[in-house]
Length: 369
Image (cartoon, rainbow, N blue to C red; front, side):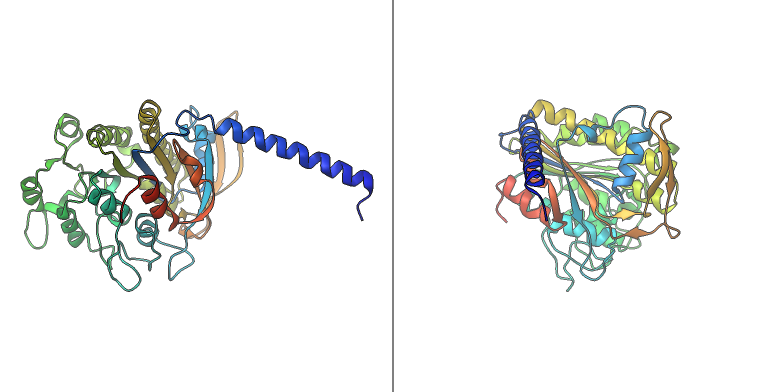
């Protein structure tokens, strides 16, 4: 039984907590973009990025991550239709298409029937669209926004779906899936016929003036940041924004930091953190654009967590952490973080299923399905 004095103390405590919550909400509502309509959405997916991956990068980075300045945070549940632990195909499809599917599938439901992605809906409504990735553009996550296939490994078939023209700008690896194919068909010829400027290196990418741009920057997957790719993803994002923002109706773009996942699979903290910081630098480019633009929503999340990473010790002053990965280094079923900035960013706080994004994006951009 609680005494009268205890009741009064509890009431006072609740009053203080409500006051603090009210003050916090008031401060958050004063973000620069609050109350404005959304014209553009930039979605970042850190493949395999869990909260421990983010905090490891926060602890060890030389400067604060831009993610730390995002005013809203939440969590996303990632299970697929047939497994508590999703893969990137099903995870990407849930985010892109709002549908749970089986592991190994992209852009289709559990029955293998095609489902429509946010990229396709945006394109149909007259918005410019883009997909940027440090993996091959035909890899599971970026492909979920473009292609429809019951097998995520059918890379050459997936490449054909880029000929449908629903993505104005796509940048990443995967040149061989377009040019060195089993059927001897050079898809880049057809892309050029459709008006794409097809480029194969960063210098030519930056020089391009085309509004339709295919940047195939590696034969397969791009190299990891530590092996020469450091700083490329921010430049890829900058070029994509520069190109897509020329559309007066706005744009939707998905950017994947693919190799956070690969570093965690290898149980390498250095690899994981380097890729995490590289993604954050790309987010910073988008944030700088959104700050000036005032009509751009940025959402940063993950398709799943990889490695079961925990931080068992560390030091803020020494900028170091002591990691522990699960023995298999495989995916886990834990919720993943969501960070959001810009107009309507508050809609992404709280806990949501990963199928939640599609309808939110459609509603925010006032699109017709």
